[in-house]
Length: 221
Ligand SMILES: Nc1ncnc2c1ncn2[C@@H]1O[C@H](COP(=O)(O)OP(=O)(O)OP(=O)(O)O)[C@@H](O)[C@H]1O
Ligand SMILES: [Mg+2]
Image (tube, rainbow, N blue to C red):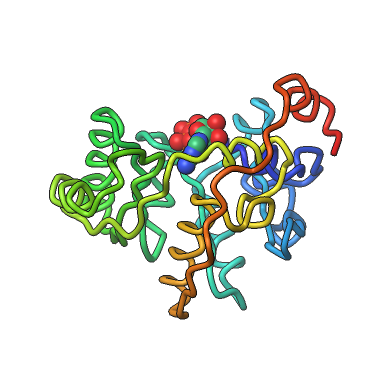
């Protein structure tokens, strides 16, 4: 049950991946236009919908989705649930997202081993929420520990939570924030395009906590 629908304001979508996986809809009916033209297949957030879904239909849905698209990102949960395992096996590349914490590294290692057991392919790792750890030496250490290349280090950045409150991707809401720049650099890596580093804007104007909470609860702009 990924949160992407909630984060992009698509939580009221009638047809979601759950309906597709329970055989009640075609995947083409579950594609929605998200911010910046990105196409999104939301997961659905009801527990009932989740119980009805058959993860084995995911492979067929992915085959239908792949047609005519350059990139498909699957947000897979950590752990060994059926819906978590299938994406590891069917993806061209699995990206391990790790926080600089021992438990997160251990989870990533388990996911890596599981992926390899399933005959899947690890594309690399992202070190997210990196603070003082964001040094080349630590990047190297994490690479060594996981046995995979660390493709990017995403800094701890309050703009991530802020853009979520606005239900917008950080690369649109705060395009020159440190985390957005790191994500864009990563995207260029996959797209094979040159990345021109913009100047970083460190802090967006802060907003009172109550205002932020009201926006999350009531969706005001
Ligand atoms: N680079 C970052 N800087 C600051 N906060 C971040 C950053 N990345 C994620 N967060 C915050 O951490 C929280 C968890 O993030 P996220 O939902 O992406 O984690 P997750 O590992 O996918 O969780 P889950 O296992 O529930 O799917 C969110 O509140 C998010 O705003
Ligand atoms: Mg998640």
